[in-house]
Length: 396
Image (cartoon, rainbow, N blue to C red; front, side, top):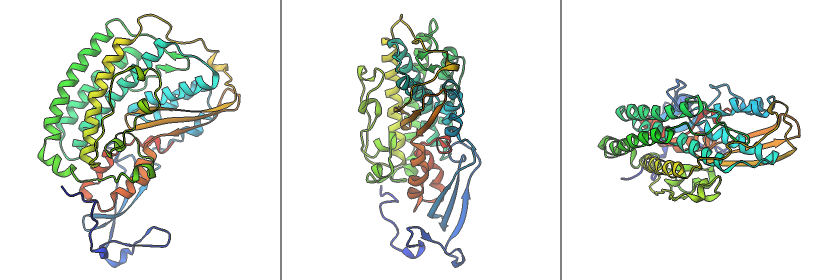
């Protein structure tokens, strides 16, 4: 199927001319163009921000992203908090997948302070990171269908996600925010019978994997609206710093767990799924494969976690802990791609600077604005969701 973005309409009169500053020159008084707004109305990613769209008929000819509706400012707040007090703030930089935040903050602190983490704690960290990825994928995989009116998959996914949140609550005491990964290791081992209950959940999720294939990916309406729509040109991947499933759907085999192994990922047997069609359908399909890979990784981790051993190294009193001066960059692979913290210490009990490298900033602002041009209004929400962004990362 021909992609809408392969061939821009030859009738350039319907598009604004490009000025010397590289931006479209739009004369709304000409009657050719109309300016409309989408959001904010908070149905997830498509409403945490606002899009200023200039349209010709039902086709987008220019797009501008407006943020600021979340009122965050996490990075500045870090500078006024002790390291341990930064954890409740960091996990809110992506609410649905908070564990990547606490992992990067903990490892960055450990690197600056020269702390070695026990092996058992590393395995437990891997387990929580993959469980976090799993529950996130259970939202985003059927959620792509939800942007086109297919709600049954969303209901299935949210129910199954709740099962993983049950395990998080059992392990950490919290369903969404966990603060289980802390400097030195983790807060505790696995409860008795945890592995058995998690395995039962994985079996239920595996049934969903096959059902969603029939209901979503083989659905004629979804295929017609997703195939060939929202094309991401592979030449844009490096230009915009595209990572994660968005890059893998464009033929780039990129995954921090493989490219720069951390924890014990090099001891696990798995492959990074890639495809090349690079449209909404392909990005959704890649995440469907990611869902299956994550289930398998959780099983491998459960089989390898040591039954005994320390779960946390000794650390100074966290309320009076002065971290040696220095700087470091820590990264991990979130469900959205490379997720990193650049941390600077000036030798006091508070960070001098913590800067988040989240994939959402480039995916949801410059990349989205470019990809929206020549898109039908009806496809705007589906395109936004297909890039899998987390707006709090932008307003950090």
